[in-house]
Length: 370
Length: 68
Image 1 (tube, rainbow over the protein chains, first blue to last red):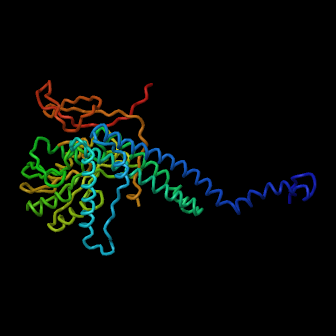
Image 2 (image 1 turned 90 degrees about the vertical axis):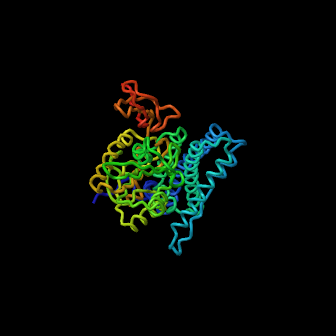
Image 3 (image 1 turned 60 degrees about the vertical axis):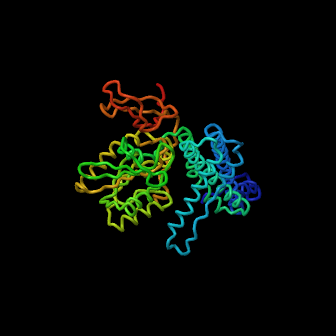
């Protein structure tokens, strides 16, 4: 054994060294969690500061857009603050039967209320500008909510010295910051009415709809009819170039149930969130209702397709969350032509001449007309 | 799990937004920087080559390449 010789004498002279050696252990043993909590608090606090800056920026963007484009009769600041705090109470789900209709009702009321509030503020009634303002407000409202939620958990963790709350917050913070950053980037695209990545579905169908007669089939949603190799094509997309997503579910339901059109196949085109490692603009084919959102539209389309035994085909264009809500990337825009070719191939392979095919372009049609 | 945590993507640097105009008859394409008021499928006059209708067919962002 090698004797531990730290000083000139025996144990008595080594007290200082022993103390210096064991003190950190004792300190971490009794105060480790507090030290860790202190460090996490510092890190989360810095992130919270960044989120606060983003929140202020987005609020300012909403006010600037309203002042510069919609020319409000009075100062919109108070109204904007009210709209940013606007909330929606989702229906009770203890008895889930029929809940989709209830959700649809609540969401429709919310959308109409926000649109009417913006219209009330504006002295101009340009629908494109109103829908753009809606989009900017929605992004700002999301950033505001993220900030408030993070602040809530930060203060709760601090108040109760609960390291586990702070630890969870610290772990998700990089993703939260990236998402908030993506929303801030989206504001630039919204302000200038530039097409966003999510608009690739409406862009594909918009191209197929060019120079055709269109009718409004449901709120902010257009229907057009054309022919392709003996098949009748029914095309549905949201009304552009304003920032609308329309009501594709209601449109499909109305076309089949109310207008009595016998559809033989439905092809849906939408942007899909990619996984890490997948390429932006990659096209994938599948089956099912390719539509995101709260689930009301997907439910309606699935219901009507099941009722009439209509096959649902899906074509999706992969992109990240940032790409989906920022100005469309070149890779995504260039995929539109390939998607159109895939749609025509699907029509030829899966349907017969004289069949009726429904093609739905899903997504936010900001900056994309038809 | 993966659908709950999709790819958030890379942070975008500085970029230029371009507008692509295309003649739907002869396929002639021109690329210019985006100006406010542009939107996809906006009619933009007649083609000088064939007289067909010109439409904006794409608006997209490209990152600014660093100059060497």
